[in-house]
Amino acid sequence: MQKLTKIVATISDRHCEPDFLSSLHQAGMDVVRINTAHQNPEQSLRIVENVRKVSSRIPVMVDTKGPEIRTNSSDEDIEVKTGDLIRMAGDSYINSDPECIRVNYPGFVKQLDAGRQIMIDDGDVALTVQEKHPDYLLCRVENSGVIKPRKSVNLPGSSIDLPALSDKDKEYIDFAISNDISFIAHSFVRSREDVVAIQELLDEHNSQVKIIAKIENQQGVDNINEILDHVHGIMIARGDLAIEVPAERIPGIQHNLIQKCIRRKKSVIVATQMLHSMIENPRPTRAEVSDIATAVFSGTDAVMLSGETAYGKYPLESVQMMTNSLREAESSRSFSLDSEVMPHDNQVSVFLSKTAVRTVQQLNTRAVITDTDTGKTARYLSAFRGRTPIYAQCYAERVMRELAMNYGILADFMDVETSKKEFVRVTLSRLIDEKEIGPEDLVVVLAGNFGKKSGPSFVEVSTATNMLTNHKS
Image 1 (tube, rainbow, N blue to C red):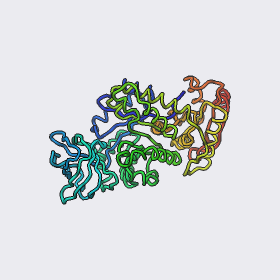
Image 2: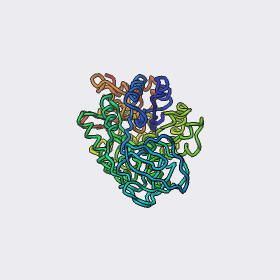
Image 3: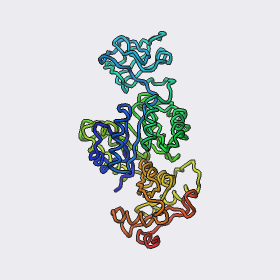
Image 4: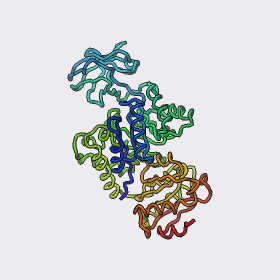
């Protein structure tokens, strides 16, 4: 059975050989993610070049750092104990020391008042502001730990006035444009302004790179509707999100964000610690497998592996386990066409897409086939979250790669000059040759007769053999 939910795998330049990438792709990896926080453009380019040696179908997603706060460099790790009082200050150029922890945000002291919490290194060390002074904050250590250089600093409940793009972000946006990258995943998106800043740079170069907003703070959750107006999709980055908001709220937030994306036909990725234990162990915990199933039951487009594939001991096994877990969850997921997909600019497309998916469920057809110039028709079909693969014939390789992120879509590239009028015959012949379907299997075709701007105009249902006969050149 084809896996319908997609897998995003984070790849490091230290382990990105073509043979390795090919094994992950065959095991179920659909999208390659590059975490730029730990790389420079030269290292990232090596990954991109190796991905393209493996397959033209695999899209690359580049993560930008976004408006984040980190601890400054220090000569050594700084050990702290519960109850210690320690100073914290903001300055980009002074190292931290045991007397004062410094961060890379000059306005740090100004933004915080007594009583506010500070979380360092994904919450491994928590501090509470006791006193505010002109040049520093006096903080109480809430739990013993070690404060290391260049680690993340989260300020739950505090709104921080940081620029949307750092110099490194701008460098990687140029990198994405120059190297025909499919997606930019921007970190710590707080409002529409953060993603509009990226889109303006893309527009200056007439770039088709698509923006994925990483939702990892309360501001991003609160402003999700306006953010969705300006992005291709979102990533629910649960690591930082669970520090910024109470951890017990994460499952509900995750479900609600997925439902919003489905209704808006936006891609949605569930990320962080999906199979975290497999960084060190060959098998996952039962809780991790249940976590994957929960994301599937909510209807996510994709799930993401981070350290599991970037530096873990069992990267291939992690992808294989993810694939098996997704298939099992998909086979037991309940199906409903009650929810509406909205908003839309083509009522006929929505109606026919819903009809095609309903036909699949009621007649037990084996496949939905459609062709698409921009990917919109395929995404309409995907939004109804059926149980059958959507074979989308794309007339642009970029669109083929973009659809690799969407639930249920198996996209293929076809030359528009030779195949526009015969995509059904070409697609069915390929699927029969590859034993994806049999000659007597029922298939559904969603297509149009009035040009690409008009969208689909009919749904056709029959056996593959009948379709082949009817669509002979």
